[in-house]
Figure 1 (cartoon, helix red, strand yellow):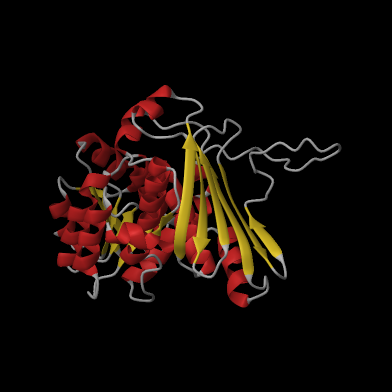
Figure 2 (cartoon, rainbow, N blue to C red):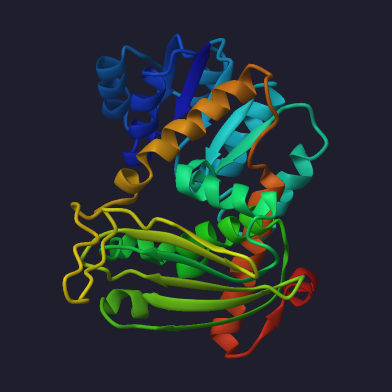
Length: 334
């Protein structure tokens, strides 16, 4: 199949490299506002470079991967859908929940599949954790812990337009909690602090945050995030049930140092970056997209799924700002 790529920054170039190695993909058509980026990708991956998203859609592509700036996501998603071309778009759907809802209304009930990039759904450990829930082997869940700790803060320019730590970072944890438990969030309580980079506080954001989510069946989920984890990139999940408990991310490259006498775990080189930690997940995610394009499966992460994670981020942002519990019903009505 022929796949188009719109946006060739860090993640777009990474996707181009992955797609170029997939057996299902015969050719790539690429574009980026920076002509040199498109030219470099074309030379490196044997792709055909064009000068616009419209040219990508006119090039006979079977599917498109959108890795452009967030502001461009809604327009590009809808353009591909109108052209009848299946879409993979990196999260978020749009910069705001209102724009995301506009996209959802436009694509809901349509025949063109749209997949949003929440890669943890394709990580082997996270998938095994979900399978343990689905099989019932854990018994009823009572506690979920989801962690995302970045090794260092993103640049000031990125922070200023990110929407805040809950919309930018914790939203991965929120999607994970929904997907793995199969439950919806009923209420949140969030808090945060600034422990490092002053430009994060200046942007009205926090660099360290925690959220307590109460799910609709009473399960408690604890989400923990920080921009300051110099030992490496730490993404983990714990599931505690009435029968058993499991964890994803407890492996030799876990960026944590045990101080127990005689302990040698973890013994590997710590993960330093999210693209390193989830390399296998990204490949599996794009492989799944080629199956969506081929009509072999529906989207494994829909716009509706992404919007639900976005609502949780909205509730946590409000809770942080007003120092109080917030129900999901409240933010949906706002």
